[in-house]
Length: 274
Image (cartoon, rainbow, N blue to C red):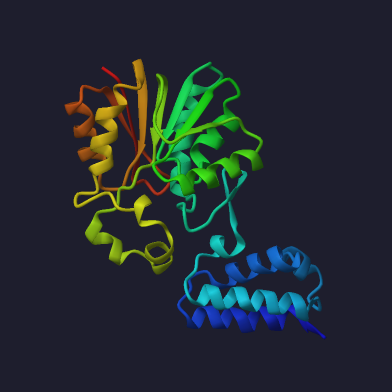
């Protein structure tokens, strides 16, 4: 038995809406494309399109998971970041649009030069892998304290046919260090969306009482791994530019620059080793 796509979409969008899932219709179409290979554009060309019972049951199971606020990316098992595909699971943060500005700034600086880049707190590997993909001459290394996260990152490195080296400790000297560290204040984690606080690894969210713990540690330790006049790039919370800039100043960094994202929030701070 087959079911009309329009009826299926309405019924399941209503379910997600009732559960308080934002962008419910978007989620349904993404599930249709992933599990049934039905694209929205194809449906509009044929509004009598049907879906098989087998595919419908599989998507309905996914909808039930989404109603429980399991992230759509975890259900599908992958997501896109800057044109590349990344496997994701409960061991890594889901790559987010906010991080694109961080990668853009690093790529603009590295360009075609033969520079050595270290991505600290790599998680899914999205930053390191995208830099490796876009900067052909760069030598990119990525590190993380979580072995489970590194396993995901290594899989993504293979998936995207890039050449990133992964380490559990930070070795050698680098021209660029980039990091999107945990920066959520501990007390604020409880106020995050359920998809984030329940399904993203807390290790990758919790920046301590002030949200600045990792910036303080990385800024201090990075001096041992940066070449003279090397640059350090951080993604930051929207209200942390002044505090992170001060941490960099206190540790002897110079030429500090703050960059905003497309929403005009402070999103990236970078500076040169003094």
